[in-house]
Image (cartoon, rainbow, N blue to C red; front, side, top):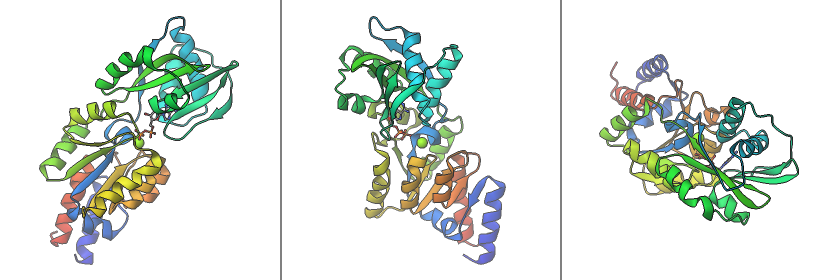
Length: 292
Ligand code: ADP
Ligand code: MG
């Protein structure tokens, strides 16, 4: 590509909300045949909300939410935000948490009002020796619908499960359709539970899903695809996604995402709209053919 056509391409991208950091990314984009997409905050709004609360006998919904929110005050995860907003909506007054710990990509642990509270997915609960039996059917029903099930245990015993739903961005279905029509292989990647992830992927027509991926393993998924000879773009928004963005042929950050993600990416979609990927491919083709 000529310097002139690259300049034109970068300029046109900027006007369309596609911020291209380096010429190389623009030149390479047309060769991308595989796109790995983070689920939360990239395909979905990233602003999840509590949509269901199920408790075991003897535990009150409001009390469970109050203990959960008291603990989540220490976390910056989008799921924590959902729990805090739900508690605020109900006007619950929160307690101070002690002994706070947040095993990354798993959940949160701490002491609230003298009780040991654990919140998180099934793997963390298993690790803590909590039997999920009483609420497993409820959790599975939530997941089948694409909702994330966050379990809560009090003093080592299952107390309830929160259903936390994160709506798909209105712009996502069209972007996914356009990318698939363009022959791009799409792989959804998430730390979330497999059933939840597959339910969301199915709604979008995405067939490949890498679920229950720990943050430190996200880059490995990208590396594996590259080792198979694929030219891989990775789109993500979170701090967790930064190593995977850096490992890809092209990293694509969401404009509303974390600064770390934006720094690790060669391309930033200012509006956080995946349609920008379709535009970036078009621009790349234009630039490589020196069309103006
Ligand atoms: P994603 O890749 O979709 O952004 P994460 O890797 O951040 O997801 O989280 C994976 C899983 O860990 C969540 O689905 C949830 O079960 C659990 N988890 C992580 N952080 C929290 C938290 N603060 N509160 C409750 N559960 C959490
Ligand atoms: Mg994310």
